[in-house]
Image (cartoon, rainbow, N blue to C red):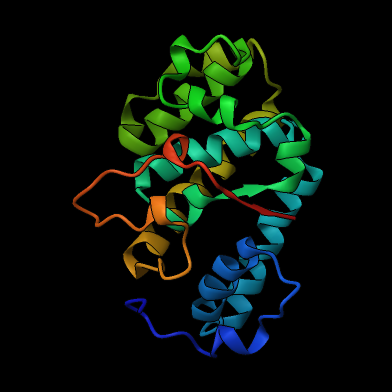
Length: 194
């Protein structure tokens, strides 16, 4: 049972045709429903970044998954967004997130964005001019804002969701106790969400 009670029973909205990934989204959404206006605003902002952003679905997803690992957000690690899968996020690429600086299947731009995401999630005050200079080799000023907003949403909401302990409907690989470290690159059956 999540630590914060849902505002409605998410089971009431589930259908037989619904994919597994929606189950997690419904559980988190049922908690966020306590603040519907704020939830709608957050969803609209994230949708705008995902739909209108120019860094690409692959980079967006890699950043999200790497931060989910730092947050230990089981719900976030278990999901793969369909648009990102279509943009080349395979489970082999997700495995590269274990050591992104050494990964052959990540671009230099992706490694720079992931370095920023790692610092944002673990030591944001270490982000200096050199980190931004490295990002500027690959990204425009607008894309720097996209990357920063993506990191801000992922760190904040991922940590909040992790504190709620919404794990009942997660695949077995993510039902570890919080004394054990989970990682998106250790799961064999992620949930694809469109």
